Length: 394
Image (cartoon, rainbow, N blue to C red; front, side, top):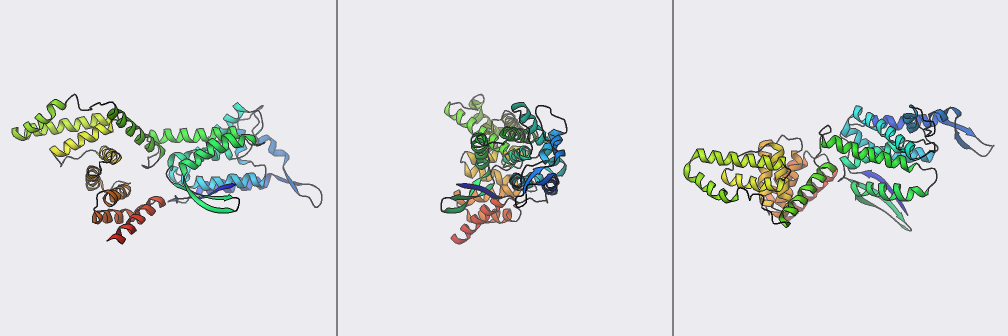
């Protein structure tokens, strides 16, 4: 059985010059380190004598070896496999991080992998696989929902299948690198695992702290969404009413506003806005969404801050409150239409109108607008497929 990833569904928006340069540099150094040897009719390759001082030797490590070892390879198959995976995953990570940040991240991945190998093994090591594992871990965090096209060969059957990057990389990390690879000789699997750990943890920290802007579909956002859903299910299962502290006076207060004029109305509106902000700070988005709906009933012209409104719209979608979610997304696009990822909001809104709310005209309007600006191939394909389905139904 053969499994080989051949491409990803993401196309870099900028040319990944640094990743290309790393591939070329590794290839050039590999050619320089070769030393032909053997009898006539037999050609084998060994590394030249001066290479030994650049291989990472855990028994007597030199500082420069924690970088130099990652640019050395022992065979054509070794460098070919490493450079293929660097090309496959590194182009998009380079595009997302930028040239300088990607260079620093790649070298840091090599160092961390080398440190991990030194702590867990006494065998000399060479190869870029640790640094590439760090890049692969970063891809897992930044693009978990993209698709990896995998070629498979099983007995007499050959074909391709698209697998979400999250599942493919986890399979490679857990099953291949941590179970199967340990049976092979001369494979520094501990350096691989150290590289994965560095890539995943470092990139999660960069996205979580805002040093790298979240794309809205990365692993950090998936974790946050899962946590919100878990919290909501726990609240519902426990019978807890997030508005219990003020519910007894809520309806009376709104009715009094209707009777007592603008001053009381403004006070109630301010109370609801403050409560929404407090719920979001507490990461209780489900409660914030409920309060938002109360605010809209009281005064539909109220506008929340951009991220608050987007989080609430996403929460309402996750709770299958689709009509309310569509209204929130519409409000978001009306006031924050220049948002960097507004095309993804339009895609979500178009799907809501198409699949759940039976409003094909509005669905087509938003899907066509999204199709003009979507950069992610998987999202663009989804958008065009939905448009084609709608147009055949009209």
